[in-house]
Image 1: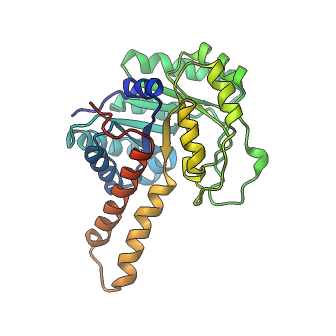
Image 2: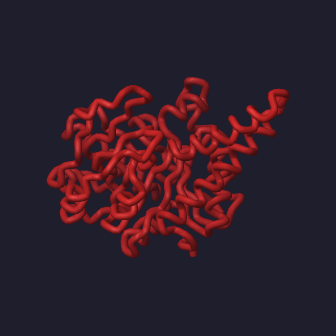
Length: 290
């Protein structure tokens, strides 16, 4: 199947009370694992790549990284019969425009560092471009911190304000809204509780589908409740990396003579398939592709 605009499945998820999984890929094997898992679970799925992954894949050239991922995403989608979207996660304005030109079917502009008014202006401009070619547009109000391995400064957590969310959606015309509910990017353990009262207030102010970032560090009970309350796209990255790297580490620890990357990367790919399958079922997306 060709790459799809997954918005119709996100809207279906919103109506029926489940969520589409958006899974980060940093390598070819991780992209393969995402679509293989979706095929086995008969679920719509989103392959997403972040700004930092682009710089890695493109050898410090994020535009080159976009070209690599665009090609990989198209082939990955063609290898399965379930709907697959290719999403740019936390992109700059330049990256969003390039991703759209290269055939990404979903993009997120990260307005971190912009004023609220500037975020509106840029997001509105990008929405017009995205919608002109049938691409799903996501942006964020509030801030989900990115500590990048450093100790979390809780003062950096800026929850989404319901009135700002409503103003932002109306002014920009975006499709999906990423909301800050207390989650944090990159956490290796499930230690965060979501502010569900904040989510309820946002949901009453905004009709658009809502997106949860940083789900790997959020308790499963809160994710489950959040989905029931209107979160219908859930991003997963660190949990995938843990499964992928853990399996590779086990192989290398068992046999110090291995030098063929295929022998340990295959183990990482297989481990990621299983964690993606588990998350798809947890999000309620099993057999939702048809």
